[in-house]
Length: 282
Image (tube, rainbow, N blue to C red; front, top):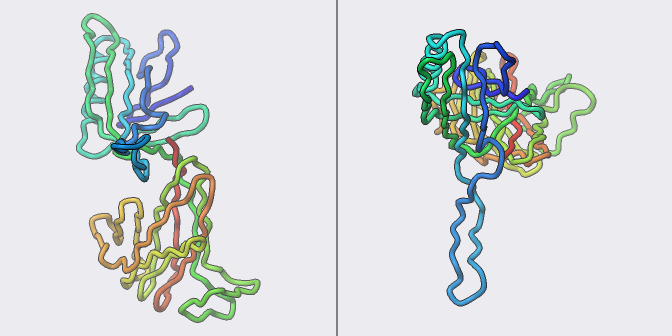
């Protein structure tokens, strides 16, 4: 069975005779390659066109036809009204499709819900159109964590590479994996206390995210490389100015990245770095 979850409502691909509830058919623009945005500029006096460079993709416009079967016409109409109230929220909605392979999600806005004539029937048919700015769809994130580098006998900072950690303590590293088929970003959260902030280094490529701001033991800093934003404790507390290095990287498809977590300054409490990496698909 395939299901669609949107705005708090679950739509199934079929209902048994006599069953009430939401069903759907005709899901479009959920799978496949979105339209290319690359320009096509012909070479005036030569063969073919100029190289367009990176072939970026347009947004996705997932849509489907839904139907609510009720015990009465009034029940069906009330269900449509409830869905419209939820689906037209100002906030983006998570649209999640669970099929025979996996569950994948997109953030969408509900652009329209058009109902067909329902008078005298106990079911209502509606056309649902959405808009996803990001053309990729994402699986459930893979989450890994690490403590700062440490040895049983202690470790001096700053860290100098290469490091020999012997056989005890934490290397301060975590491996982010992407089993998907498109490159994806990890989102990082770091808990305090760290008197000067922290550094996250992509070992394979040498790129660094460096956040320099004092963190108490109760503070939680989030860095979202996909949007280039960073905040402390609440998403409204933006601290992008304290990202002194923002060499954001992606995890390639069917590959991994090894991340080194380094505290800046002194350490108190039990700091933890977490990476959340959703596999990406078209």
